[in-house]
Image 1 (cartoon, rainbow, N blue to C red):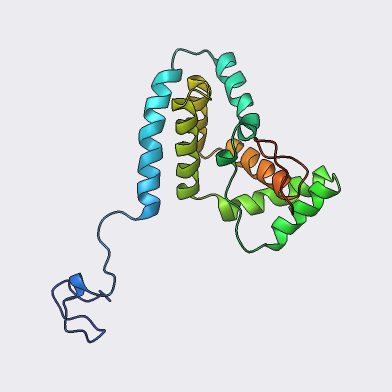
Image 2 (cartoon, rainbow, N blue to C red):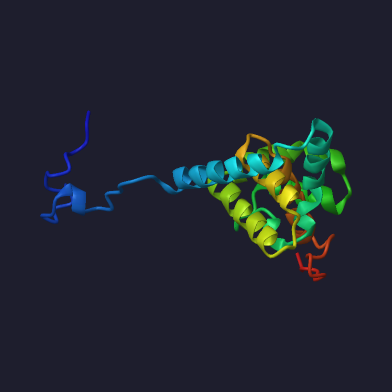
Length: 179
């Protein structure tokens, strides 16, 4: 059943038309805008990397795992409410149980991997590149990774954030956070 027409009176009783009431949204949503932003930046990044051969690209993408060590902005945003899976990851880090950590990471990424988070990380990568703190080829590889279905950078970002959260690793500035 279709919803009310744009020019009909809103069901809330305000007397206003639907198109001007109750948070009627027009245009692309935040998720769509983030996907578009990533796609546009990935096209430019692909042009920058097109001259590299397979081995050079492979080496470049291998470097992505250490990228979150460069700046705190490259760590994934952890949820305010601690989930059971996130607590398991923190416990695995505290006890150096790599297997237990690897077991819960995909589930955590399923919850945190959104186009908006990917776009936020892409903006941080580009900001570091523009300030000359990050090599442009490595930045291009990071953008392509974030635009793809790959979770290489997201995984590294999550692991780094978890290590910082548990106090096992300092921030890029050298600070240790209390868990």
